[in-house]
Image (cartoon, rainbow, N blue to C red; front, side, top):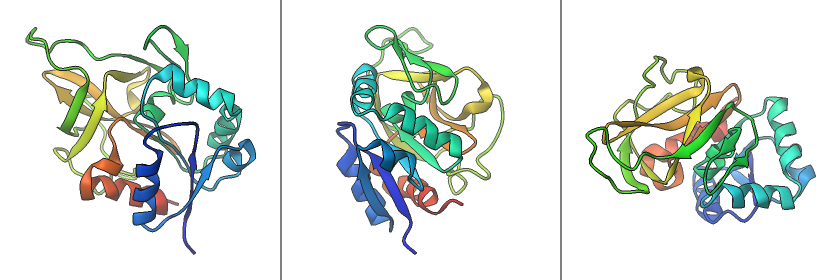
Length: 215
């Protein structure tokens, strides 16, 4: 039986790339903007590129916030990508204070404008960067990353970064001129990737394949 993945359509600009990657990896894809389709999904993916406030407004306009939360409470697999990961947290400081989905405790803040050496660096953080285990320990056994190794590179494009309240929800980091940036978060059935697995070559596709087939 072909695994079915529901991708939430709330106006996110990277939706088509995500759908193509899922289909390439063997999934049947349902693109959904109806509450009943979201809450009744088998596996749910929240994509996203752009501003936090616009993303939350898109979900609210389509009345998808409560169905999305209800889906996550059921314990089925959920994946957020880029802005979709950031919206999993409580709030963001991007262009003012904005409430998020509150699926994982934490906030989204601006990436520091300089490295730890005091030298300014480019914002947004864009391009390939290596994944690392979180500083407080832990590995990727039993997660969507279990086939990856520290040092594997993924493709990032973002100006704001997630800061989980509890370090145990920090699944992976990357280094940007000495600044530690949260690259992935996880809590039970929910995973979020700050990077774009659909744009990260074969290694990125391994994450998508694991999401499709995870039990």
